[in-house]
Amino acid sequence: MPWSVSGKVGVITGASCGLGHAITKRLGAQHQMKLACVSRRELTIDLPEGCRGFKADIQSSAECDQLLKLVRKEMGGVAVLVNCAGVTQNKIHAMSSDADYDLVMNTNVRGAFNVTRAALRHGGLLQAGEGSVVHIGSTVGLTGNKGQVLYAASKAALSAASKSWAKEYGAKNIRFNVVAPGLMEGGGMGETLSEAQREEWRRNCPLGRLATVDDVADMVVAVLLSSYVNGQTIAVDGGAN
Image (tube, rainbow, N blue to C red; front, top):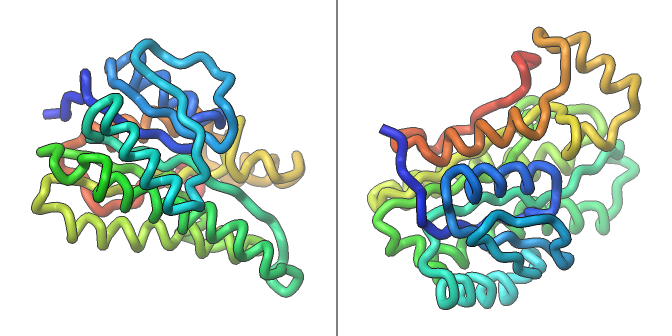
């Protein structure tokens, strides 16, 4: 039986991006969740009733701790976390710099670690009775890709960490999973590639198209609500991999 999240409190990072907004609309409007929607910048998107915008840099553990304490105080204990914040990069590894490494790893890995730890320590996730966490990964984290060494490593880290989180917190009935899109219209890696590269993907994909943010958001919600999926990385790539 799907888990009911109606009235529960959730946190979504990267809420201003296309995918984050799509997830927010589903959980807030369709499932009546109370959502803390987090972005580095002031949110300018329309939020469903009961949802609030918060500004925070998830690369800072102190800001994440403050954020989750505030959410718990003002909205209630957190039962759901969706980590949608991330950056992509296309660069041959020999040409990459320390700054490239810091940007990708600090955003995609440190950021996810910071907000997850803060939710466990300060957000009430451990006391929720049941909880669900979904990180947005990438099929590149499963297959690798030329010119995306750092990006692939950062997304693979989320898959490996989620397996460990699942083992650490399964006894608390908290599930950890990764939803891994392939190329996606309206966000993510698909926005960084040329039209020729996107057309190559379409030719290699059995469904003949890129994913939409709605395709991926639907899977995120399905995984969040599943009461027995835990420690998994689920590809949303139309069968391309």
